[in-house]
Length: 415
Image (cartoon, rainbow, N blue to C red; front, side, top):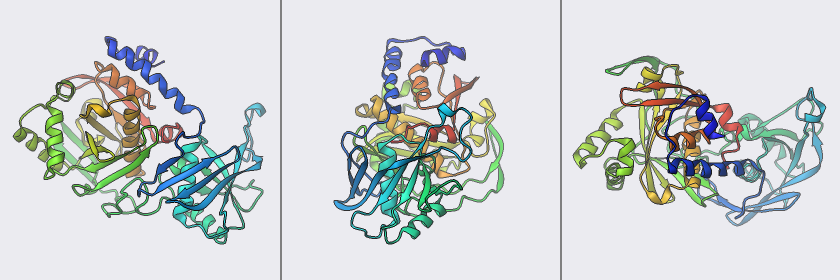
């Protein structure tokens, strides 16, 4: 399928042995679209709390830090998918009704309710469900208000039970209802950004390769801050993104070492001395349109990322058609121990998730890999990106790939 996509938009590449192997490996992505329970029945929340859960045919029983606190029970009733139904009756698939239960009839904190829904959405690829809040929970009205006000739950006129709400994966993965300091974004709780979006203030950039009007960008996170953290069950590790700290010897030496690897330099083309790399990183830190990041698997750094605003990037100059809040990312994966399919899927979906979470006005991500890099192209296409066109930089011919917020969140990529 991926090869036919490339042929469809007339991308002329030479299929190396490695590229053909990559196509075969990427077929594994299909497995992620099949509903299935997790194998290890455990994961970690962004605040490092441990969650254990047991799945049966009709229930998910959940513990957080070894304390029993909540269950999700399948009720013996279904609900139509929409108030007006479906034009074609055979496609009118009912929505499951799941009851939120406190086994000991104790009040449930918002954080625990959010963790329960986290367990649901990583364990089952349901796009939406009806959540029934058990009336035996002492603070059931407060839970209902929390779900409605955060956008994590919604009401519909055709809901027959007053304790029913509609919950959706689409809202959950956008951070709806996430506790402060407990969500994927900014998990350390340090306030480098407020709850409200940064105000729209028109400004412009004029550089040798960029002349553009665009919104003023918010201050960048403090060097060394953990920006994002998420547990990836397929590798049983936590991926995290940390703002680059030039004064951190580990950060600097990793970038220096990785940039001088032949494999990396063939694409990145920044091999050089420590002085050259220090100057390069100092420019990245001063650049208001991009954020330099070191990626970690648990405590092991594995790659370097530059997340940028497309409007004031040379991608917009040569590729065009960008929107005010489009974002993109340049990536260098340096550690060979983290180059497998599952690792790549883990960090690619996580960096995309980060960019969408960072500003709710970001409705599209852009990628511009070289048409001569079939492995990168096909890996990117496998995570939901589509080809808009081809265009030329002064140094390479690229494919202009995009993915919308809606498409990214509809696909069951985040698990």
